[in-house]
Length: 531
Image 1 (cartoon, rainbow, N blue to C red):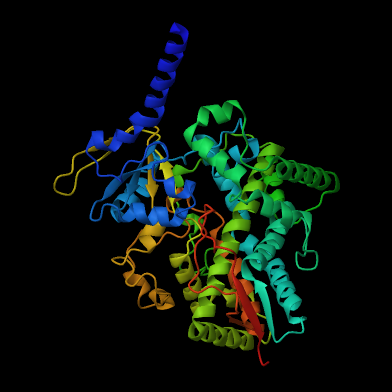
Image 2 (image 1 turned 30 degrees about the vertical axis):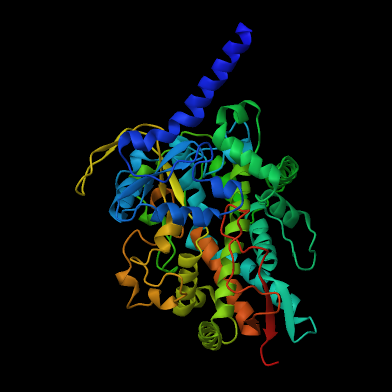
């Protein structure tokens, strides 16, 4: 009897320490926060599929209007939500050395492939790896990838052009996933595929399987990572599907071995890392080409925060981990942006027609074959894409882990110094910022004119963050932007995007996924130009 009582007492004590006590963190510090929901915190809506993750971020952002920051709970983890633009700049840029890392919810021990990627790396290992990855996304390298992107876009366009119907019905979410799969498979793992001619190819199925976070098993894993991180690490619970990870690792090892033995050079990610293993120096970057309002140049980073001499030796498994990260991240986020841009063009035919006119003019100026430079100079294309990323950002929030004690000094009346300890988490609510009517008037309206030459200067710095902010912004942003522009250039010169009977307007964000995704896909029609 006494033993049972002791066990019960221990269980209750552990439950209180881990699940109840943390939920009063912000009240104890006198910080306004969202209402306390035990265990689930602000993720209660996600857990019950009653609220999308994007809507949760927006709700949390609007919870305490007028405050520079407020508190929320990611399950039982207290998280500081940064609302003030100047404070975002200070934490993510000026005082970045206090907030170098992201929060890791999957340990390297549990999932080595995910734990070693650039997003998860911490401290010096991140400082060493980031400059190596930058070599893949120079203008010179991206220009080399342009030819491949064009072939993939032409393959998609030709596939639907050959169909006999005047209006070809399709799921744009599925089509965009196939398009991005083909591009990323070639530029990261050196495999050429055509997911329209071969709709069940292994690489596409891998991407779908590995990025399907809507399944019950994946959702249980996510909740376990947040609620019981030590237990999931001890049990070595992986995030990536084991079969998909095994297939990818085997494919990459075979590819790396073949290149070493036969001296094959393709100019893709594998080549960049193989060169880095040999200690070859970084090529010079060319910054003369305009990449668009949404792009973030690597030269904008404060180089003092990035290691100039690498101390980490790259292994073959490091290469695999980075390739896997870019494959999965690109597969999901780029295809999502394409889907929502297609939706906005479909429901705004005047904007679609204006963009098509710019495409036709550019094509005529290039004598029928658009060049890389000409595509990047298309201002209205850039405006439409920038507005798509404002309204439908691929990442709805970004976090930072406090790596050194930091104090947020008071500015507004009633504020007190807020001392952040090592391990505390701050969150930048991108979706909330982008939908704030004080920052973007009438935020639900799709208006590319926000980003014209006259208006873009009035956008508040650090209010528009489609690719994150500071030294840990999305390193592949220019690659993703170019992919989207190439596709729509070729798609809109051949088709008009129109709604069909199955099209749902307005579009609804899926409540079962962690990113911004249309619920049930995006059925639409491709009406052949001239038909």
